Amino acid sequence: MKSIPHTFSSYELTAEEELQGQLLNQLQQAALQNLLCTVAKQKLELVLDTAAPLAFTQQEAYLRGQYDVLTHLLSLNEMAAETLRNPPTNQ
Image (cartoon, rainbow, N blue to C red; front, side, top):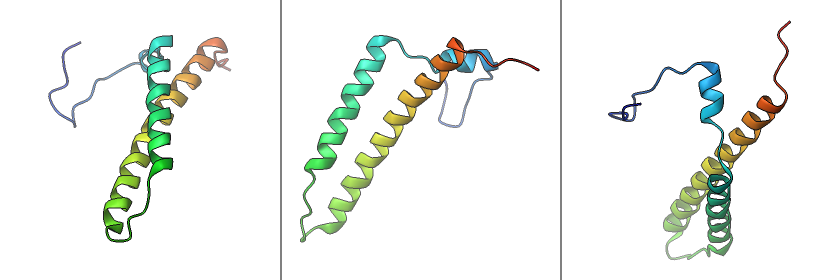
């Protein structure tokens, strides 16, 4: 596969390729879980500075975005693994 030239470029994948692409190996899962843990800790440690409430809001939003992306990737992995374990029956 060649590299994607910019953000708005994409690949055409079959449903099977899409499913396989969502699977993570154990090391990737562990690394993403560690990142998720780090982000969650950073989010909990945020302290509102009343002199700079906008900075707090921006940092909280940034961490929330990271948290959402990481949980989404881990969730896609779980759903793909479940689909491969129990493929849908075509009727």
